[in-house]
Image (tube, rainbow, N blue to C red; front, top):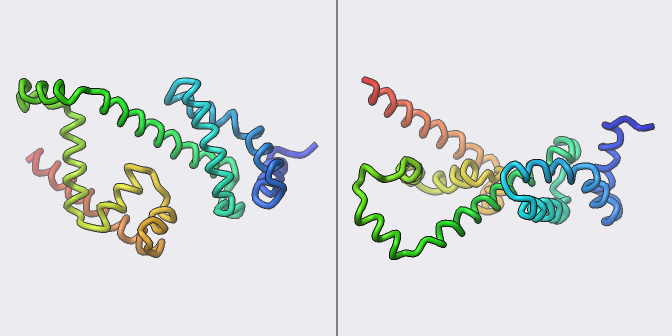
Length: 190
């Protein structure tokens, strides 16, 4: 009988290079339950099942990007699942925001004072202002990497930039934001 590592390595080889049906079936049989469990932590069962399906479809479509030397197939699938879960949660939040009648929102804003603005809204505004202060393309890169959980290779491809340039922008921008927020925090305490 094969060890788990040998079995997972075999699945990864079949997924990357083998017959389409076999690779997808083996990967789903091995990691489908894990992906479902992750999704169930964030959403209902029917939504979680949709996320599992989208995860494996995404994985299959981008299987050429999978590098067995970079890490196990299971970890790669979990990263894709996390992105699909985030996409689902983000789209659900957008749908909830859209269900508020504009008239009700305007009425609420007119009747409430600035002290009643939810903390989350204030924080979101602060984050957007901080990202805008970085300039472009740094603000977009940080937004894609941190808020959208996009890997640097995808950001580089989307923005048509070298991966190293994206990583440099990201590193410098995060350092600038950290320094700015630490300085603001220190000034607030003084």
